[in-house]
Image 1 (tube, rainbow, N blue to C red):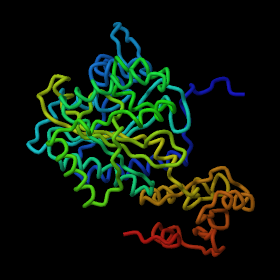
Image 2: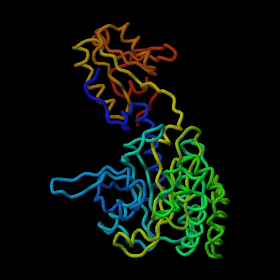
Image 3: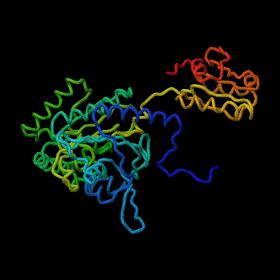
Image 4: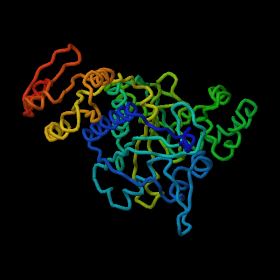
Length: 415
């Protein structure tokens, strides 16, 4: 038995999982670059006050889920539970917000929340996200939705984008008054855990994941009944754009998202059977930049859970492309420079340095599902050749130790 175990809610990622993570990250960065988003890195911990001010003092994230700690000077910090506040802080501090057409940023990394672990939900988890700061155009909203939808589509993850609008601040205030009255009349039909939010933040009850509440709020007042003509027209135009670019979406009148800073357009990607909640989502946050000390400028963004996306990706368990089998100490030493040159050319070769018996070495290589095996024993050393074996059809041939000839035997054409 091991003496130590990983903390609850964390996990050790095996090579297959990290390969899926890297596929997600690579595609995300490629789309990010194509759409003109600058990829940035921000600290994994920030001042606790930053999250209290932005995420919301009454949210579950701030009141229950943050990992807080004090440093050597008794300053209070928290491991980041989400990405937007830290990115806005970084953009303001480093003067990144300076474009007439807005500034766009993307990020990827670990985040931390203390909550009950379950499938697709961990206390240390990975998120990717994008923020479009400084543009109030309808197309900015559509672009963020397109970004998230395209990422999932390219990863072959079936999804549905749910959209809604929280309206203007006045429309939202009128709706909240009406919603609060309805919630007070229907307390018996709500989960006990949600009752405290009737006074603190009734809108958050619409985002509840508790079954009793979910069933009840279907009959609650809908915010679209409080939209004015401007909000209605904006939302109509947004759905028109999404129709034209073939986004798979539906309007969800109960969608509010779980953070205090959202206003107007909100959206969420769902769809994987068995996954917890959503893959990700986001919305507009037109007051957050000003709340954190910047100018009053609009913004929109989204975040998505890498762990949840990865759980929806079916990936075959691929073996190594090529395995190198040097048989004995002298053969290893003699052939190492040649193998290093192949690595320098970007050819993936996994070296088995501890082999001495060819029969056993080939058996182990075969069990790993390698496509090719390079054999270098005493016979090859004397002839200054290397044996290349195709593990799929059994063909093998001797080639010189020249890098170009070895690559050709592996079916590769070096430029």
